[in-house]
Image (cartoon, rainbow, N blue to C red; front, side, top):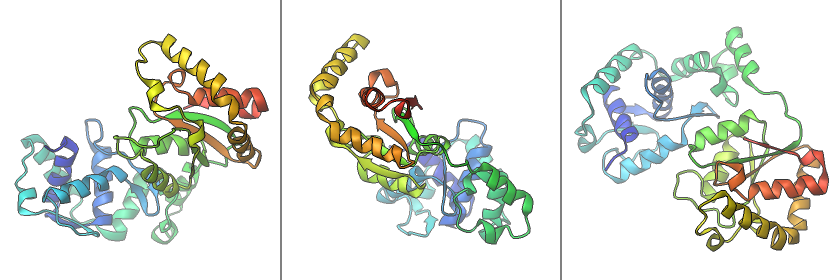
Length: 297
């Protein structure tokens, strides 16, 4: 069973000749997703060489496991089984039109073109200056897309309903420098949000990840939460019985902010009123004042 986005990858590789280099494919996938009429299948973050999708590479690994792509680090290459996977005629037509439009664009020229069209994704590029020598307009657009240094402070964010890339872009947009995971057990069935993957993804966009499990709530306490009143009762007990004993962890977060960091407290729930990270943020504000007044992303 394949996701539609995974079928899209196979169809795009096929339309591009069945064998294409990794950097070229990533840039062409970005262009295709941004030109698509429907909701984009993949989101991207500004990375070392421009726009990058962690999720597409996770899908690549799955497609290799299924025998649909060849196991090559620097290329996307279809196996016969991968070539045989079918997509709708309309998708195939769009893919073929797309591949013809970009048939002569590869390598540095392709990367530079993605920077011209989408300068935000080049804000962390290590090669933009070299590729865009003399292209003052694009270099200025990239500089304008870079956010000025944000003020120290506190925000909170949940990953429910978000892709890893969309989540990281929110952090980048708010100027977050430290991502503080307040889950007791930082595991997730959703791609990108288990500890090691989230840590690596955050590091890739210049954000330091720290896990403070002592601020978490044991999973058994979260069972049978059906109404807001259930959540409120849980959080009252958490603040009274557990959070009140975590002065060291709270002081540690305050210390980051005092050193000029912008800290994001993170957990699963999208709604802040249904997540204990709000209790942590409230405790910080009550103890340490307006410097810890939270913003909810």
